[in-house]
Image 1 (cartoon, rainbow, N blue to C red):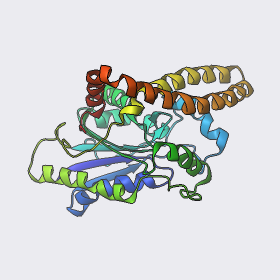
Image 2 (cartoon, rainbow, N blue to C red):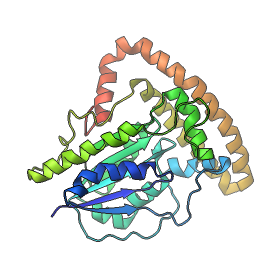
Image 3 (cartoon, one colour):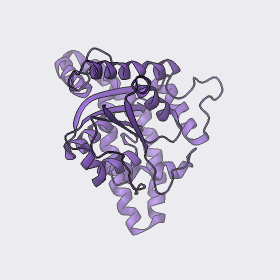
Length: 301
């Protein structure tokens, strides 16, 4: 019998539902699915407190998360590991980073096929790059990636997603609801069904698994914004960590300034970079298409 390990961490419960829907066809067919919900030693609050939320970002982007509870696996090795994660500050969430860095996980992941399942607002490219690196360090084999993003457009979700994180309310006023649409939550089941078909036919698990299934969609206008944002997060995160080593009060003061900078960056650089990319697209078409193909791997659009 095939053995699958499903790893996830969810604050709101949305990612839990997404992950469970993914493996539902497999479980209904009797495939063994071990579910491992990562537990931080100190729980993250939900809803978030405003400053606690932003104070989390330096360690998140520099991949230095606080410890998680010891991991316990029912088996030493699995035929497949599915890692479901959300995106924090263009990086994998801290508990998932801690899992991927643990020696226990590295032993399980070594030479094992891995599928990543992402549920996020809209930007996930840079987070997946970090996950790819962590998986490579464990000598895991990334064979697929499935991404589901928020149902509202970029600018609406710029308001609704933070409000959800800070208030716990997905629907506020006349704004569209935050989070992944119910239709997309259901759609993820077809990827589990495809896995079931592969298993039933005794076919090998490889990077052709989700080809032509629209497992991911690359938003071309956000590629440049993600790169700029990731670079900014890295530099400011490094500065804030250094400030914290001098004085927690200094870190907090600089963090207040950074929040203003970040909002300004989002309101200016993101739309400007989108306009620049659109204007230069005829000249950069081949390069942009190459980048899209790269970021879409291994599943492809």
